[in-house]
Amino acid sequence: MRIIVLGAGVVGTAAAWYLRGDGHAVSVVDAADGPARETSFANAGHLAATSGPWADQTVPMKLMKWLGREDAPLLLRPRFDPELVRWGLKFLRNCTAARYATNAAPISALGLMSVSATAGLRENLDIDDDFSDRGTLTLLGDRKDLAEMPKRLATMRAAGYDASEVVQGEIAAIEPTLEHVSGQYAGAILARGDAIGDAHKFTVGLAARAADAGVVFRYGARVEAIELHNGAARGLKLAGGERLDADAIVLAAGPWSAKLAAPLGVKLPIYPGRGYSATIPVAGRNGAPTYCVVDEHRKLYFTRFRDRLRVAGTLELNGFGPPSDKRAAATLGHLRRMYPDGGDFSQVENWSALRPMTPDGKPLIGATGVPGLWVDSGHGPLGWTLAAGSAEMLAALIAGRAPAMEAGHFDPRRFA
Ligand SMILES: Cc1cc2nc3c(=O)[nH]c(=O)nc-3n(C[C@H](O)[C@H](O)[C@H](O)COP(=O)(O)OP(=O)(O)OC[C@H]3O[C@@H](n4cnc5c(N)ncnc54)[C@H](O)[C@@H]3O)c2cc1C
Image (cartoon, rainbow, N blue to C red; front, side, top):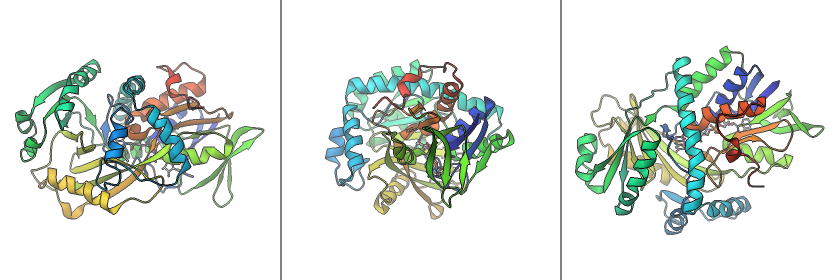
């Protein structure tokens, strides 16, 4: 089959790789000038196989409490936006303990499969993405977090991680660069073996191997519309009028997927959730951590990519509105506070992007109801973690094979 993948982020590039592996003639079209230039560019890098969805029972209260607070970990900007209302109501329905558990289980199962598939690609294709599996030190803010610890340790251990409790006094012994702030935290969880990698470097490497294997990448090509012939998706119309034909289209356009599907009557519940990062070169300083450090309460990751240190995270719901200078400055401020000698702050690279968020945190993988139109999108805060596993699943569905795990959890039509 001739298949066009719309989107060269980590998700679309992984899909192209697996589809090519099945013998399809694959091309990838992206408006950007290279792979992973949008949401997959400078994320936190955590291969978060045991993470759950954002929607949990604590979120509605937090959103209310932090309304209008510019530096809040979760910020909802009140705006007239029917999409936000529609999506928000579905999101709120998922903010219960029971729904969290139902949603977290398949995300985690896909995450474990996916992290292992990503490792296979990294190794077999010799991709250097600054991978490290030294582990993650998750700092817990208060007693409530401590009370949740046994449940979390059990989840991590069941997933195969060497996870242990760290009392407050031991934090600095494990990660000496935290000496000056360790007293501000109630305790921590150390997950040895938990991994990080640079999603952008990985995607660039995978795109190069895919091109060697015959995938055709076309950059700088903005898609205006997915075109139908006799009711089936059979091509793309590019800005400038050029048309590309295909037997099938895979929509992997991250936060823009919903806008591209809507004219075909396909409603994808994907809303943009903005996050921020700031990256500095370590530049020989001694104050950068060796573990990936997570500040649970502030929703921030501090990730060491070999010779770079990055802070990334927080969520802002403001549609496709512009990034906030104040939030970018607050993000960088946290890097200075935690790691004042972590690197060269005069060379900081600030970044911001939109996560493609679904209301239940599960990605949308599979058929759309329009013949020939498939979707692999809506990976929210976990696209790097879930890309390879999602791509394997999508390729199996397109080929008519049974995927390695139940694909129904991720059915794009589950909200209809
Ligand atoms: C601050 C932050 C931290 C994060 N941390 C983590 C983490 O630690 N672990 C993790 O697993 N995930 C993390 N994520 C989430 C992860 O980055 C995303 O889920 C993932 O990058 C989404 O990938 P994608 O390929 O779906 O989208 P994208 O990377 O955005 O790719 C979509 C592509 O589609 C193209 N496109 C869109 N519209 C058109 C059009 N009309 N024509 C042509 N091309 C088009 C865009 O140019 C883009 O290249 C984080 C995200 C953020 C913002």
